[in-house]
Length: 331
Image (cartoon, rainbow, N blue to C red):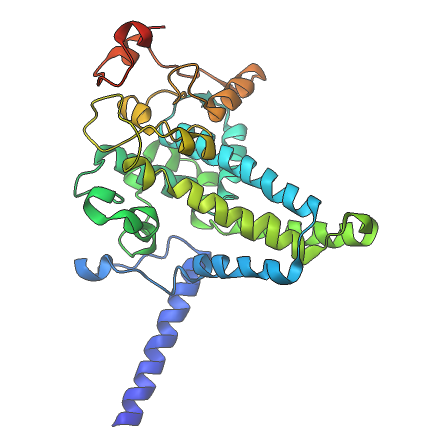
């Protein structure tokens, strides 16, 4: 009897592992109908690659560092942060500007390289967040689920694995976006491979740079991505917990200058929840918003247009006394 039970448990474990590994490659493999209490649990097998990325940071002990590897890591952090903030957030989630279909695909590819799932999944969950911000139905509210759940655990469970296509019908009609969303690991895998090959070529033809394939992979992909993860996640956790509230929104959103610098403007989160329809989140000249400056550059180059600013009346609406007077807000 015990042998039969052991064999059965092994078979169940193998089935679970293979099902999880298929979801690593194909995001559209859903869990089907599962009880609510099970849907809230973390699927440790499915999120194993995410966990291993953190462990892989320790490989820096063996691969060492070089100026070029660190520079690549910083550069890819900046590029992919802009891809998340400009494209996944301000374009796919809120449609704060317009662009051509080819550029839309390029924006989606750049966003996918950040290893934060596909553009449809990201935008759909973000739209759901704005519709339910800090209510008990919000997928990641520190008020209701706690800090760490809002920071990372919310996307690790079964409940939030599915792409809510019904919330992104405007973009789900594009087959190229559905492909990127379904096979979300394709672009990150190509990026990782290209970094490794680049490192090998530099070792072979520019050995004076002191880098190699493994070093470029660890710094350019692993470390850069993990730092990018948690910088992005702070908007869901810290930006709903710490900072100042300028506007009387129906949620806990805060403005936090340090998060704004880290996330290229996303830390002006109370501004954003007050008026999510603007491509600009730093509402005033002294609120540094690198994403807004980047979008203005793209507009000047003719790559995007109809970029939506902050209407003057929005700056003065629902103000909370925090040192900003209506007269100052109108400037």
